[in-house]
Image 1 (spheres, rainbow, N blue to C red):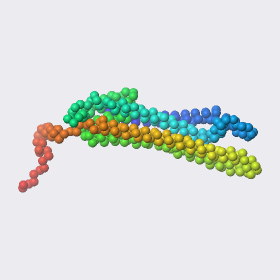
Image 2: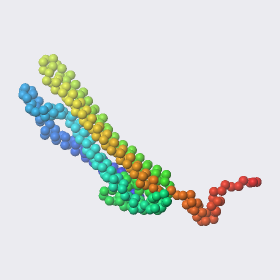
Image 3: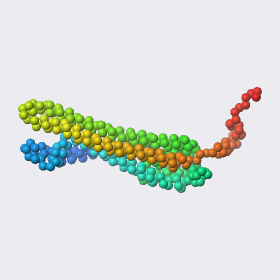
Image 4: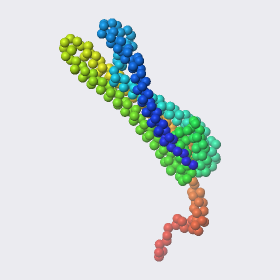
Length: 311
């Protein structure tokens, strides 16, 4: 029995979703700017030039957002929100699977096979792995991490009969999943760095425009300089606020992912690994005798050291 890695089937889907999300965010924000923000900001600027009250504080908000740097920052912020929502949905699906598996995944397969309590033999491990494999084909369990980890660990135990190897298999795959989740946050961390950088580009552009209009300010017209400085400060303000909000959401997602990894490790240890049947020395001796009967060698001869000559 084999169960494919659920993360592999999601790679192409994730790439497509992220690409479409980036395009959709730029189109959506560009439409909002073209229909609402820039027309309202132009009206407010025109009213101010004639000495007329711009109206509401919302007009000032549109003036702060009207430049291209703010538009790019908001587009990237919306894209980051799409990625975060998608990852939170996947995370909630994994948590739901853990909640449904925790109470009763082993109740049907457990037997009183040892005096100390319930344990899982190699034969039972194969049966449980088959059951988990069947469950993974259901829509609610499809491409989920826990069924994959449990099935691979029990398969390993059924093949080798070694609890340490089963432990290494389960914990190794959980560790790989943790590292993959961490690597997938790199794009969001890049956005947290890129958004303030774009804001600083707007600051440099605004200061450059203000310096070019210094002659107008010396002649008494400071409107051009103040407008350029407004671009400089507004772009940085918007970029820093957006990056702070995005970083908070990233930390919330990361803490939830770490909590999921801890729950997976706890579940595998308490529900699976601690119940695997350890083969007793009597069982090993019996298997050694059976092997000796097949090969014609007595069990004592299998382990006894060779006698030295002359003894």
